[in-house]
Amino acid sequence: MANLNVTIAGLTLSNPVMPAPGPPVWNGEAMAACAAAGAGAIVSKTVSVRPAQVPTPNMAQVRGGFLNTELWSELPVEQFIEREYPLAKATGLPLIISLGYTAEEIADLAPRVRPFADGLELSTHYIGDDPTPMMNAIRAAKDAVDVPVFVKLSPFRDMKSAAQAAAEAGADGIVAINSFGPCLGVDAETGHLLMGSQGGYGWLSGTALKPLALRCVFDVARAVDLPIVGVGGISRGIDAIEFFMVGASAVGLCTEAILKGPQVFGKVVREIDAWLDQHGYNSIQDVQGLAIRNWEQRAFRTHHVPPVLDVDACTGCGLCETSCVYDAIRVVDRKAVLDEERCYGCGLCVSRCPVRALALA
Image (cartoon, rainbow, N blue to C red; front, side, top):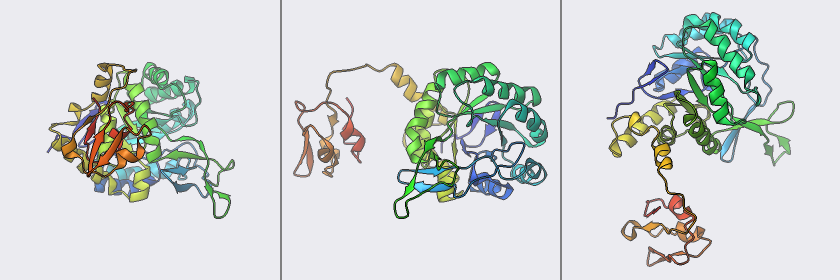
């Protein structure tokens, strides 16, 4: 069994998987359910100085992803202080309290929630390309409390400069990323938009968000020396491993916990553990940043380099032949045959092979 302990900004977690703020942590019982299912820390749903008026409908599964027009919590912060945070603290896990949005609101909220907070997460979902409001919010939190302050970045701005601005303002860690949008969904049977927001728009999360989230974490990790919580499209242990490889120290899940329930936290933890064992790694730290290091040592190529074919491993499924637009690979007698002269080295067949019989040279 691998060592799954991680320390982020001074907080020690028994495993690196936690909820991201949203419906799965909307109240104390929900937070406790995430803890019981195997999360390594609790992140509460975002609160602000007044409850949100959330439009309905506000969540929908779409092909490849998820749309929502969720806002911050519809519960007052007073209720969280009186009831919900104590229930979360009773789990014994570190509690990171999510707050929004302006410096003035953070200055009001942070001291009030401090008795329950092992850390704060500041949402920047509604902050544009100018980092000044984010920086002011971070400074307000740092002035108000003595616990680690994480800031959650949306994927709209240049991630490197945003992370550098957050570090300059005193952030102790980065959470990347928030959902992406605005996006639109339509029910073809009725002609109605899926979201009940005033503009009809929603925000994209779930599986479709993962490549964007990985890019953002990759950029942040190369820009600042701060711990990163990777969020966006994580549904399996291998997804979390990919985030560790591009520099994340821990990961957050929201959409998958909505779709599958809180048991997903323990499932992802077990899958991380199994993957590390199967690949001979002793800890998460052994793979952290691996993709960055490999990328820095890469040889950039513009000439065509065919993949390496392991004929013995090939099962003849035919996926490579179906998707090769250059007709460079065919299945003959249930084994792939590669025509290196026709191959353009695009790599698609490597990514599609279910048994890894093809590999990049």
